[in-house]
Length: 257
Image (cartoon, rainbow, N blue to C red; front, side, top):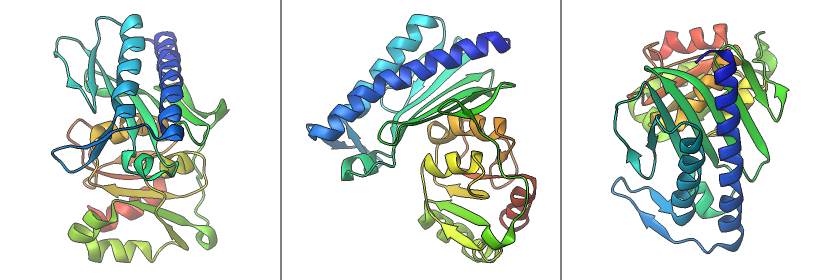
């Protein structure tokens, strides 16, 4: 895909996310939503399944030869160079408990490289998106990471702190001391804040590619660095993330790698 093709594909993904949002909001408001517990002890709802069906249907109409990998219905055949990664409700626990920190995540991978991403938060009216070489945006406005180090207001946000404590407690503690504020915004939200320059670093573990694929593209296109704890690029097997600007990412790698 060239730049024009990626821009078109991003528009298709944005539309799919927006269409799925209507159903998600409806289930959220009326609570007519059956919750099941999956084998990994995570919840899944009717809204998750219906949203994923909507997204796949819309994208498949535009790209019938592409493959799909969704949170609820798994991965289809592997005969295409293009793989759509879909998490219809990232943050289902938040959705079930009734607070708005959940989102729809849609990304496209071409031959192992993430090339576009859409992150749509239905209850917060936020849609972040970007594609390779095209920049990143939030509700149509450009996103740009904070490039300076402002120690007096520096902020780090962590996700899935339990696994961080278990595996990197001492190193994490020393890193957190470098920052003025420590927050735990979690899920999509701290990546939106990072890409917009409101916070300086995100550290997260116990994730999967469907959680972070779209956000990876958005952070990169906003001028950021995002890797695993060893400095490796984000891929299908990634389970941990460090995201920031040149300085904060390097600080984190000094302690966590």
